[in-house]
Length: 208
Image 1 (cartoon, one colour):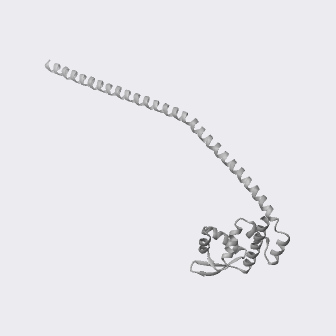
Image 2 (cartoon, helix red, strand yellow):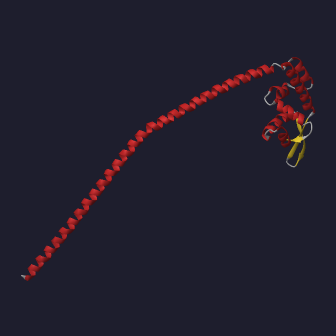
Image 3 (cartoon, helix red, strand yellow):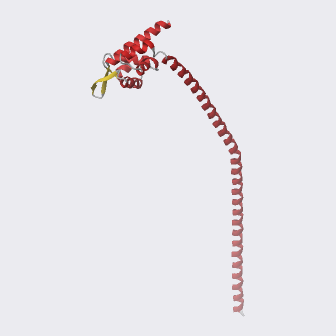
């Protein structure tokens, strides 16, 4: 009989231990479930707020883009309008100046072996007076840097004018010192310079 009593005591102890473990596991399970539920709830709330904010911001962003595109289109149209007006005025001025290449003027220039292109370069085109001054200065050989300092204009501008003068044979390269190139007015350039000076002087007198 004592052995049976001891056995029952051990069985009771084991049962109570299992019940304790089950209760502890149930508590942990409930805690985990509560934690997961809370996390899911917060995540859902954050997602809803994000979508709401994006939905409110998108129309504003689209409105800003539309207004910016509209402003750019207006600026583009205004620029085209101004460019068209300047082009029209420029064409009108060019047509009025082309009329002087005739009669006595044409005869004088062609007799010296000079074409309409040279006349336009020194008389009609923009920068003609500057190119005339460069030809006059190059009666004594100079390089581009000296010309730039003499007239107080940018070296790149001098380079552009010299390219045109060399193209028409009005100036020529006469010397190279290291990397420095020296230029001078050619015989053709001297004839063109004389005729251009006469033309400017004559029309200056007519205007006054």
